[in-house]
Image 1 (cartoon, rainbow, N blue to C red):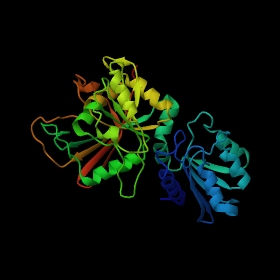
Image 2: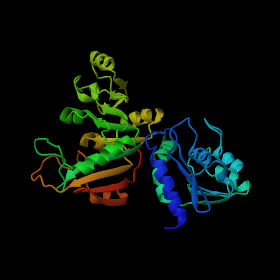
Image 3: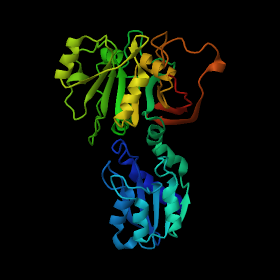
Image 4: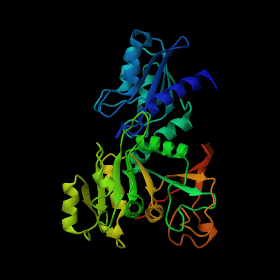
Length: 369
């Protein structure tokens, strides 16, 4: 690994500290280096606060002059809630700028690099580009579509079962995998399940980490408002709200009772008797939900897949055999008739997490109306 890559990796590590906290902005990290010594570090903590480059410049004080800066995303060139970072770097007198990837925001999109070059600052774009682009994938998708980037997480046994014949699914995956999921919850803007998951598992959908964590928005898709009033997701004490997406088939009295318990009930159009997922995703995007974690169940996941709403999969495979039919498959429904019609995935990755295998892949989606 080159020195340039090492410094960009440090910037990426800084940026990841703010995952799930920066919407509608992306997570960005920056490192300032002078004479092979890191003199300044920074990351963007949340919208409305200074960007990563500004925090790094403040940390470097007067050592930024003549130094190099490594930043995961192109410095902005426009006036938003904060001033243009490109101008701040020019004023500070940095010598060179190393950028992970170009900003997909049309307000920037190369203009930051151009401004730096016009000021006589050398620049290099594309350092650790794949990782930098992956870091801002939710931001990029939200900018492009107005909807959240969606990660579907599931766990199954080696013989493809998500639960036993009696519906028992606690626990398919091991402790290390479950802790990984809690870290993931801490880094997303919202978690979503269908009402069948609430009825079967009574989940909290909270982030439970030894060092603490942040609860994201909890979303339940429930076309007829079957969610029990005493369920944990309704009564959990948390700083994060619970949103229940339903249709006009929901009982008005139950809507009022859920609202009185602190839940937000969102009335949406229906498609074939169910909540319109396209409409729900659009409404979440309007709330600056960039990164959505879809945790179940199979029926909701199948509907999201058929609507072209799943961007990435994470499947934990446990070294267990249920045998028999159980509740198999990541998605419900008949699926495609011919193998040639199967949906392709890309960027397939495999890693071991405790005793489980974690398979992740990008879904090559096509949004459906």
